[in-house]
Image 1 (tube, rainbow, N blue to C red):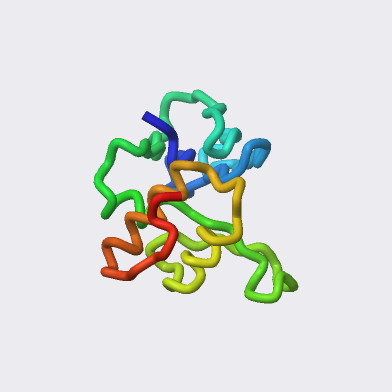
Image 2 (image 1 turned 90 degrees about the vertical axis):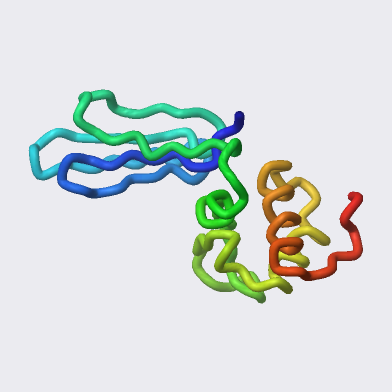
Length: 130
């Protein structure tokens, strides 16, 4: 199993999520305790007060869950926009195909999910075997 979401929910309902290796996030809850999460999809590091809810998801879940969990970061079509993250389910087909065609160091779990997403949508991609 591989991690596809690294997040937790604090007692007041706030969700904090780490999306990349050293993406250290903290939040002070309404109860006054500080919560943290770190590690992106590489490792899970978090606070352990015992009252938080673990929202981690692993790749042993069906594609319908993975497509709404895994995220891809983008700086826009021309690379000049602020970084934003979208779930694979919210990416358009051309964007997914461009990522698969031109991003050679893509995480294999994300790549597999993108390929499955194109199949899920009934879309052809010329490099299925790569």
